Image (cartoon, rainbow, N blue to C red; front, top):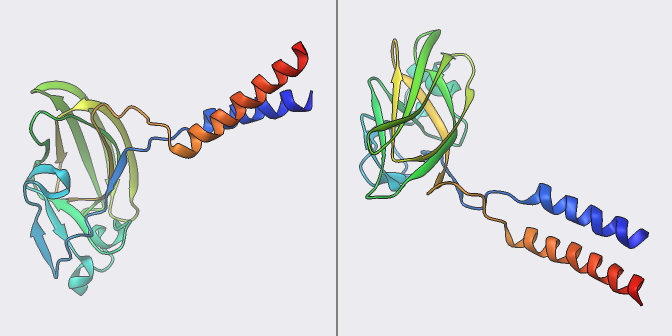
Length: 196
């Protein structure tokens, strides 16, 4: 009975431990910038239009603004003051999982994020932003090749964008596979013992 319970617990642990091993986070902290610069095509594995990187520490003017408060990782944030675009390179697709957002200057603003595949609408999400606290926005837009970010009033700030290449199918990590094999071997050992 003890082995059966152990095997069952290992199997349950395996099901909870499978994680997406191919998820990537864009922190916008590299390359280092003294003030700001445009995000160039090819940066972070995507093509970009109307997106910039800013180091809020570069000027005391940004202290306490959405640029400063919206920073999740070390130094930089991304921002835009118009419609901003993020494109997959070539024929590749990706899954947009989530990102952190704030309004840059306005106390409140509305951000609409729209996803496409080959120009065909795949999904959209509209959220309210403030310049007082970052908001984690979950998208889970799968199999897309273009994202449009649009703030209604003014500039928006983004940090720690999480995506998966391709369809975003979770890939078991090696430790999860090992744990699963251990659970399966425990169950097989118990079955052999009972039949003997």
